[in-house]
Image 1 (cartoon, rainbow, N blue to C red):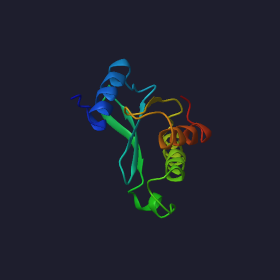
Image 2 (tube, rainbow, N blue to C red; image 1 turned 30 degrees about the vertical axis):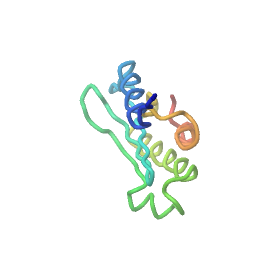
Image 3 (cartoon, rainbow, N blue to C red; image 1 turned 90 degrees about the vertical axis):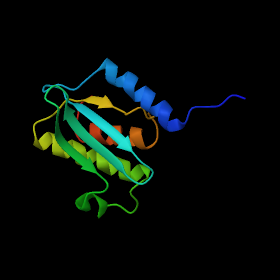
Image 4 (cartoon, rainbow, N blue to C red; image 1 turned 180 degrees about the vertical axis):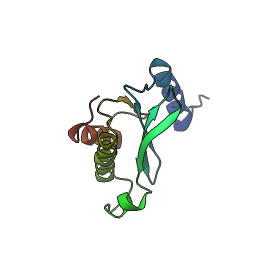
Length: 122
């Protein structure tokens, strides 16, 4: 009988492979995205210094009150615009996109497209 690995383990392995290929620097930090069943999280990270430069998630009160649901494509798109605005306020214009091992479709794609439209370059 063939047993399949769980989706979580597959995603974590993909994420590990992605992280071996690139990392965020002070000039071009990493936009890391994580999604759970209920919420989405995005943060911009400088891996050299080991610091988070800015973050946004659907758990935060000011983001959550603008959304009807916190786990759909519309919420992901809104979160993309929020993280882009916060990054531009800190002077960050270009980032490396880290999809976190998730497939680039649906919520992840919506967040990335909204961040690009709001002014981030990647």
